Length: 323
Image 1 (cartoon, rainbow, N blue to C red):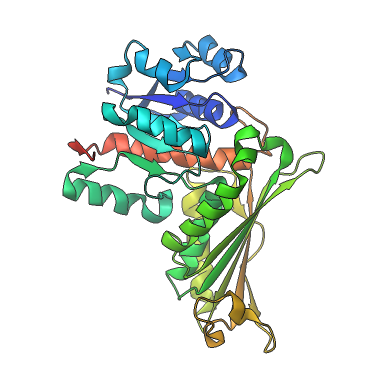
Image 2 (cartoon, rainbow, N blue to C red):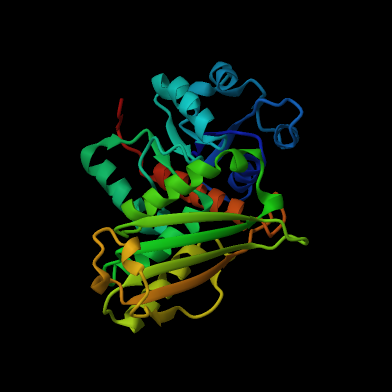
């Protein structure tokens, strides 16, 4: 079987972990290039030892590399600002971009929620979107849960809190904190189905480092609690199929909203009758430790989701790419 050639742009933690996943786990993708801007980065050194072609001259260097024309998919694991520039440089070459930054140039994709819909739409139209966005690590962990609740009952408000080990947050993550909150909040609404979304990220400095923890709060009205529990548990199983360390920490909780609680301030239309119950879901994400320790579940869920998307794109190519 001929594999689809891919390049990873960004030789930091996320890009290096993604490269190793492609090499170890994928039967449909082939690493054709590892791209960075620091010639002394561990990611480029590791790629060279694994006999992956490398360049430290960024996307300009990638475009000049032998075999660039055979690369079909490019992962961007740099930063939101850098991705805007990288996407512009790659646009004339018809590559499919999988964006792991919060730049959100292309549509949001969260595999168990809307990947099938995205691919089916492209197949029907014969036009492939040339840039898909993986939201954020917190979004990949929590948006499936918001969707699991919203497919049972309307969710006027959803809030997520992503807590990650400070040691697992590299320069790119830290530079994108503002974009993280805005992008994740938008995707909670657009993909998760909440009418209003809010996202909070916490860089936990605890030593030894703690693994990723995510909390999802949804406000709902009258609904079938058992149906919501079942929906959430099924969604957790779907995510765990490609992120084995993804799990519920405890059963889904339902708490009545007190009569005097000013919850109406969170709702799009201020209708307090639509928010009588708070649903709380507590998650833990342990990394597979392909490159970094297991506490870096935030990296693992992002790269695992990106790998899943690219493999599905490779299996269902379309005949055209949008301009």
